[in-house]
Image 1 (cartoon, one colour):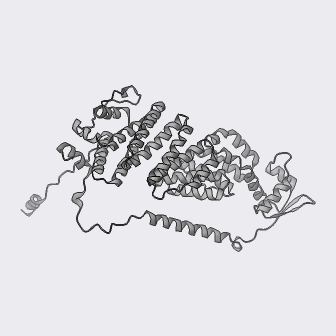
Image 2: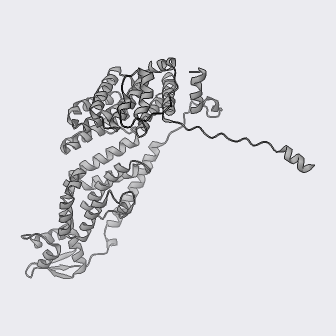
Image 3: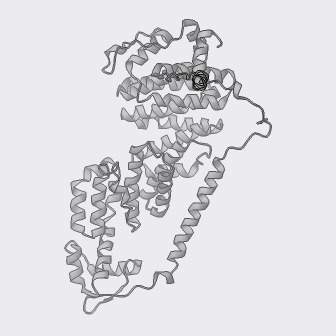
Length: 472
């Protein structure tokens, strides 16, 4: 009997319903509803957050999705089915005419939808049409002059610049970018200012105008309130400009910061470009790049040619280095780093001299020229003397007999090098602590956190259901 009662007393276990799979059009509808709610509540942070979400559709958006959006929203006659990525499916946006009319009363929602069209055009490489749409969108946003549109305006500026870059007409939009930066600064739009600073620097760098880019960089202050992804881009562009100008120590610091602040699981192409530049800058500083940079499975193929360059520099073989540069010249020119690669021969010679300094106590200068494979007519005595003066090697020259005599190096702990190394590490820790403090979000002292406000929160599913029951 007791066993029977226990069995009867056991409550029935309800099977949990599997979560609904949120499709692209469902997600798009959700973002529009969230944007409408944020506009009605005048919640600027939520407007900015939803406006940024338009980028996440970049990889998944297809012509079939746009057809399902543009036909009910704008009665569009665009023939989306003529594009190669068109796939027939039965999914709908599930918004009636009254709801669509209500949504389109807000210019932010209308522009949000059209930005999605612009992103898709760039994805499918329809550049001429993308340039036209980008110009129309930018003109409209400037005319609207609504602060709620600042985030969308910065996104439009980005794709506007990208469309003109792909069209090969990037120089034409430089005055508009400068005017846009001036307006963003006057409106205290940190995100817009950061985006436009990076676009202007990219514009100058695209045409190898490094003096102009450096002058512009000196005249602007990068806003502290900008997004991390814009800060990382700025650090990379700054590092590239400083490296081209020969300020390798400052460039190295900027590039290391860019790598540390980069996202872990995305932006692989950007991080590879930073690592290429970082490897060359470290070689120009006389340092050896970290081997993990090249052994990582994600980087091996992309950094293969730079690995060959690093290997030839470490070996100190000038002939092998020259052959590598000549064979892969087009690769370095495509990466816009050929200028830095051409500065490496002196580093190769110094690396070779270091090996000879460790291997031989005495060696003839003529043999130095043979082992370093110097070009005919080179003066090995002058090269060795310069390396001694720079502190690359510890040796003296017997000018009468033409011999380089190696000397024992002093104890490194008797120099200031360990102190300088510790100083750099301590400075890094202080900078990291300062950045962490700036990123903290403090509680609002006027808000009562003891109240139970869970009922005020609306989930995404509840928001979508409200469309059907008419709460919005």
